[in-house]
Amino acid sequence: MTALERDMTSEVLKAIAHPIRLGVLEILSEHAERTVTQLYEELGCSQSMMSQQVKILCQQKLVDIRKEGTQKHCRLANPDFLKLFECMHKHLRQFLNFQD
Image (cartoon, rainbow, N blue to C red):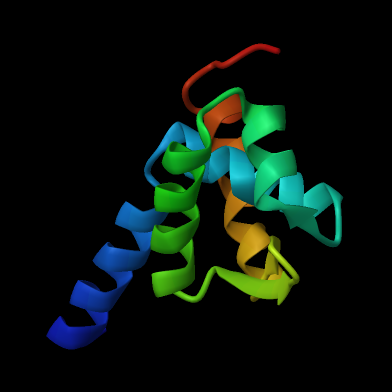
């Protein structure tokens, strides 16, 4: 990995290193699309907080936004990215002894 690739990787990992942003990705992995309103209601945060979090995910091309009237619809930009979550799930359970 080059220094530039490490820097870019670090930025992507920073983008997911927040419980709300992880929640957004989790919800979008289960549903093809959700509005920003649905996301903040499901995750129990404010509209402004959700807008900030979605913006960060969009900047790293993890989430795409489609506008329909006044509604913003979110979807995963790269579903293959979810493989990272499979690895994290395994790590939590096998190495950090996390129990559901």
